[in-house]
Length: 153
Image (cartoon, rainbow, N blue to C red; front, side, top):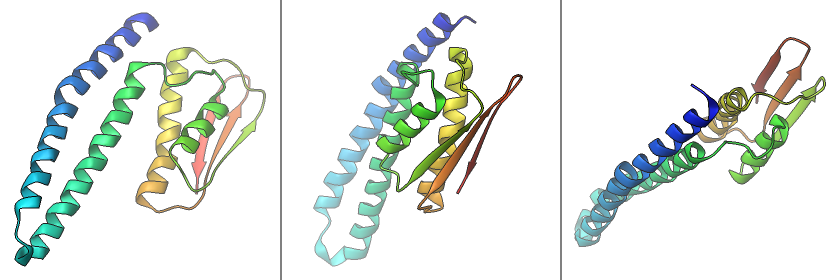
């Protein structure tokens, strides 16, 4: 599959996800919020649990929208993997994210670049979200025959 076909398919999938799944979840979230507002104060624990579930659902919708946005267009506006990773993590309000580059950076095929970007970007997101990391690092190593990306916290 050529790059244009792949990009077109990603755009179609993103549109379908946004128009169906995410909009449906958003509608459900509004209904849950309406029910929460109807609960009497005497069931405070139940109301708090429902509000926690609503907060988690809202976070899931936000993450889904971010994923859909990533499908709609090429993941990076630059072919510089280090710049793209740093910019994305900064947009995610991460506590601290550093990128070290070894070797001479070179242009990557857009499909390869997008896949490496997604994989390399997932590790710090998970470290910040699930391990409450305060700092993560990515190391990108270019050599004549290979590209290595390593994340650590």
